[in-house]
Each structure stands twice: as structure tokens, then as C-alpha cells.
Image 1 (cartoon, rainbow, N blue to C red):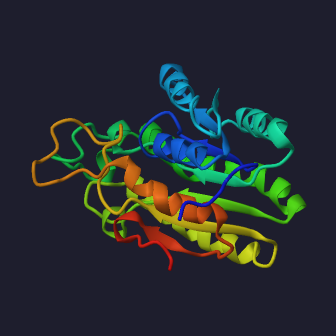
Image 2 (cartoon, helix red, strand yellow):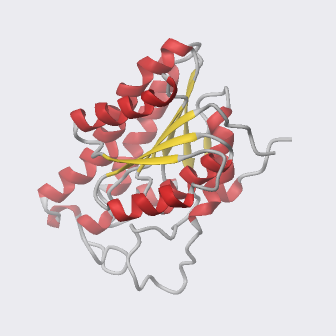
Length: 248
């Protein structure tokens, strides 16, 4: 059963395409008002907002880089302006291996050949960006005694795959942060959980020309578990969308 998200406010980072877009539209279909953070492509943001017009909830896109504290604060303030609270945060914005090695799927490179600036950029977005977003949102959730933070992750096998550094290690750090934060927020009404598609997904992170043996998942696969995590009262869950079964 789809949960009723009417009167709830969600922030979805990286909401212009792929997993973020799918979740934002899924939440709007369930009645939530959604603010998506888009770092660069405003045309994608406008298309997502337009797609939400016939839906019960609305989507508004804000240009914001999650690694820039002032832009994070502006994004949070925009979400607060809707109803004075934030109920859901989906930390989906991430930079993948294409920034380090365009041929990472077919020609993996060792870490010592990586450009330090590209390495740092991936870590800044995938780890520091999640910290900055969560740090900005949690005090408002604590004030209402309710909130759900959903951190988008990857399969464990991908984290340690040859040639997937620093993307894989950045997601390992995200998972450790999630466990720590779930413990620190225990008993507050604010929960922190992990959501992974369960395999390579058709998003902008995957380059053209992937091997035929790799069947890409649709980003829509994450919507049902993301809806569940939006309303769950249980922290510390790690859900693979490919293994998701609706609770009985």
C-alpha cells in the first residue's frame, strides 16, 4: 500500500534525473511537497517540476551544490518556507567514477593514477555533502520529533570493486556515517536508513557502451522502498530495492 504523504515536505538531492527524479516524482504522487536540489542542469530540474503538475504533491527545484554550506542553508530555508518543517531528506546527490576515469567500466585504473582534484571532488560530494545536508536538516526534525533521512548507497561488492576508488570507498563511509547517526538519533523520532537499487542503474553515472552482460535497472525500482522509508519509525535499515517486498 502506498503511504499517504500529504502535508509532508521532502528534500531530494540530485533530483534532476535518475534515482533522485524517480523518488521525487514518487513522493509527489503520494502527496508530498518536494524540493529537489540540482547542482547544474536547470533544464532537467524544470522538466521534473513540470512533470509533477498533475500530481497531488508539487515539486520545486532549487539550484544548490550540497558541498557549499551557504547553498545548503538556502535549500533548507526554501523547504521550510512550505510548512515550517522538513519531514524527509533523501541524500541522493553523488559524483561517480566518470569524473575520475571515463572508461571505468571497461578499463579500470589503479588509485595511484587518479587525479587528486577529481578524487577530492567525489569525496566532497558523496561524504561531506551528505554531512552538510543532514547537519542542516536534523535540528528542524528534532524540533518536531519526527523525520526520516534516507542515504542512497550501492552494493557491497561495488564498494570494493577494482577500479571503483574513490566512489566505492565514499559509499562505505556513507554507510558507516548512517550507522553512527542512527545510534546518535535513537529515541528522538528521527530515523536514518540506507537504500540501494541493488545493481547498476540507468542513470547519468553509467557511461554509454556498457558490456551487454550488464543489465541496467530502471531508477523506478527504488520508489516503493523509498516510500516505505519515508514513513518508517525504524532506524538502521539497509534495503536493496531488487530484494524489496512490501511489508505484510
